[in-house]
Structures are given as structure tokens and as C-alpha cells.
Image (cartoon, rainbow, N blue to C red; front, top):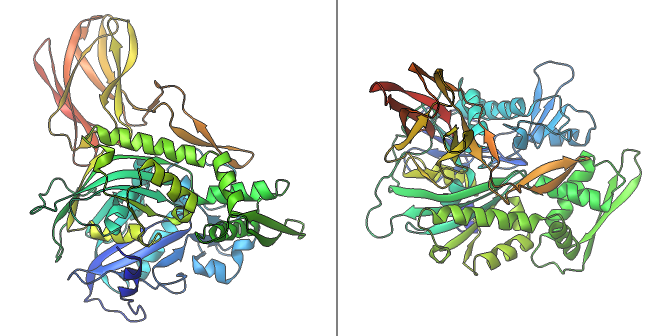
Amino acid sequence: MEKNKIDQFEKINWSETNTNIFGTLAIDLGSSTTVVVFQKENGQPPELLDLPPISRTSGEIPSLIWKSSEKEECYLIGQQVIDLNLINEQENNLSQDFKRWIGSSKIEPIYQSKISPEKAGEILIHTIWEKVSAKVQVKRLVLTAPVDTYREYRTWLVNVCNTLQVKEIALVDEPTAAAMGAGVAPGSTLLVLDFGGSTIDMSIVALEGGEGQASPIAQLVRFDGNNLEGKSTQVLRSAKVLGKSGLRLGGKDIDRWISHHLLPEETPTNSILSKAEELKCELSNINLKETLVISKQVKNNENKEKFLKLSKKGLEELLIEKGLLKSIENLFIQTINRAKRNSFELKDLDSVVLVGGGSRIPLIKNFLSNLCNATPFLTPPPIEAIALGALNLTPGVQVKDVLNKGVSLRCWNKKNEKHIWHPLFLAGQTWPTSKPLEIILAASINNQLSLDLRIGEPEEEGSNEIIYIDGLPTLTTTESKDKIKELNNTIISIPLDPPGEIGKDCIKLFFIINDHCQLEVEGIDLRTNTKITSQNLGEIR
């Protein structure tokens, strides 16, 4: 999609109600900005929605929630918070940058709002839904999710959307949507870097087709088992994710790095962080001289004037020092290695797509260009591309996806006489699976009455993780190649009748990944030939 294509979008007059309009609503919940796009079901161009008073501009809503101290359930949303200058208040009634904490096992002290991250996201999505569904008939809702916390984020979205009166709800990961939002031709293979406010996601996406008709492969990632259906004039295309990886680091963290670097003795207030963001954006101008210093005046907690002063060269040195380029390189290596398991080679890459506010930083593009051997870059509108791509994915495009982290089973090793984590499916495994994976399990003790199935996620050696030291985001590296994170799924216990004997094979199990990226297992007792009924071990990713 060309940059100027955004000018072709229609803008709906939402002051009038027209319940005869049917279509698809796409919501891309962002750390800084949430994008809302609507497309009528007769195939007309997508429309950026102006939803006063919460919109900043058509299609864009600041991801801000303010809780009134006077009423228990009274909230101000988006642009309302900015218009009343509440974003600079020091009270913890304000919720911002809440997306990164949705699905997180631990919320760091830098998030100080009275409103939980999950509640803030729910309020924003429900407010958007109420405003849109009051004017038109939404038949399909498409939502996007980051790669790094996809499973937890999806669980939250399912709960949020339970009360919405909509026939179909679909979910797609953000880099896949970004690939579709770039508007490239079928048959292309893309590397997508989505550098948002709180996450960096990367993926290799192949758009099938180009020579003859594209063949359907698998259904779009979806909720509640509902197939995506509806009227559309779009030609069917297929998108296959070959490999992907993600990191919970983004533009908001760069703002904190800038603030701490320039004012190390000051607590980073919302006002200071806002000016740091402005400074970052201005220093991202590709035509700016490297040594030109830009200054921003701020006030600290004691209302004293301070200045943020930085050059483009200084910003780049700071990002390198903090390990940003190294973390992007690690994501690149992980993504490429996972895609290679699906017969991908770097020479197959046709284009690189950059989306998200952080993608505007020239240092990022230049670094990625070197990694990709100068593969051509596509630069769709960085804010709107994901929501537009999510629309393109339904109903005219279907997706076959891959596992991001793989899955392992805890089982007894007869040779070493101890429990180990045995890999079932590796990162990069396509799903749904075409045939079951067989595995035989033995008892670990005499007179064992049951076998418990526990599954876990392997962590790759060299992968990055974000920790917070004194409120400052810091990159760390996973050193152990054998680190396994046990998933909090329900443990399935398989009874043994008769009881098992140590070291003796008891059961043969058959594992598959179903259409919803859930791990299912069934099997047979090798001693009695009794069938073990199919059971669901929960969602993996």
C-alpha cells in the first residue's frame, strides 16, 4: 500500500445512524494509539472512523483511560484525557501504556494506575464497540494481538468480547496483519517488523498465489470456533506464516531511556516522558543532520525548568548502548531460523515491511537493511497498516500459522531414570497439524496408578527478556538452552489399570494441534489395548 493511499479512504459521518449498513470492524489496540477501521460488506474501501470526542483524528484514538474520582464507574477516554490536560496530572487515575501488561505474570511498579491493564483495555474496546454498533450493524469484529504474549492476550480478549453482540470475532497476530496492510502482490514473501509502543514483533509471511489461483489452506485464527463468512468482492488469497518472534520492548521504553539519559536525577513524570517522545520523533527525521541538537523544555516534580537536549547521533548511540540493535538482531536470527524449518531461505525474501511508530527511526531501517542484504523496503502508513491488514485478512484471505515457541512434554526417561522435558513440536511447526505425533510413555515407579501430562514452553538460548531495574527497562539474555516454562494448563491425569511397573511401557499417545492451536491427545493402553479418550491440553502458541 502506498503512503498516499490513506487519502482515498472514506470518512463516515457518525452523527447519523444507518442500521442498514453492514460490515467488518477492525480494532488494533496499540500502546500509544488505537486504530479503528470499518469496511462495508459490499467490498467498498475501508473507512477510518471519526468517533468524537474520543478520537484524535479519523481512525486514531489515544490509548488513554482516566478514572473520575467522583464516580466509581465514570471514565474519560482517549482524546478527552488530552483535551482536559489530564495526561500531565500526577494522580494515578490515569492509565496509559497498559497494553504491554495485559497477560503479563508480573506488573512492574512503573505502571501506577488505579485501573488494571486488563480493565483499561476492556473499557477502551467496549467504548469503541458501543459507539460504532449504535450507528451500523457490525457482523464481524477483527482484533489484533502481539506475538510475544499472544496466548495470554487472546485469553483476555475472549473474556472481553463475551458480551459483545456480534456474529463473528477473529484474531490475527500483528505482523501478519501488517504484511497484508502493505498491499503487496500474491506470491510475495515478506519480513515484517512491527515496532510498536510496547512490543517489537517480527515475522516471515508468504502470500500464496501469483501464478494462477491461490488455494485455500486453513482458516483464519478465530474465536469460539466460528468460521469467517460473509459477502466480499475480494479475491481469495492465502497467507502463511513461516516464522515469527517477539519481544516486550517498544517506543515507550525508548522514551524512558532518553529521560534517564538526559535527566538521570529526575523521576520520569508523564510530562517529561511526553517531551522525550516528542524529542525522539523529531530526531527520527531522516533528513536531520546527525549533530544538530534539539532541545525540549520540561518541568520536574518541583516545578523547576529543565531541558532535554539530544542530537540524532546521540540518540543512535544511546539505542546501541542499551542493546536495541542486538535485540533486533536476535529476533531476526530466531525468526529466520524458525522459517528455515519451513523451507525458507533469506534469498527468497521479496520485501521488508516496517510498521509501528518505532519503525520511523532511521537507525532501525539501516540496521535491518544490512541484515536483509538490501532487500527492498515497503513503508505503508506505520500507524494504520495493521488495522487495514486485519480487514484484508477477512474474509478474502485465510492464514496458516506456525508455533512461536514450541511445546514439550514432561516424561520419564528410562535410560537416565529421571524426568525430562521431551520436545513434541518445535517453534516453526505449522498448525493445524496434518498427522498425529506418536509417543510411548513408561511408568516411573512401581504400582503407579496414573500418568500426569504436563506441558511446557522451551526458551531459546540467546533470546532477550526485559527486566526493570529502578524503573528502567533493561535487556537481558537467556543463557540456558534447556530452560522450560511450564504452562498453566489443566494437568491431565491418565489412570493406569492395572498399575504401572517402573520402566515398563504403558501407553501410546497421539498428539495433534487442532484448528484453534490447542494441543489434543488421545491414545491406547499397550497392555490392555484399551482406548484412551481424546482430551484437550489447552492452547499453545
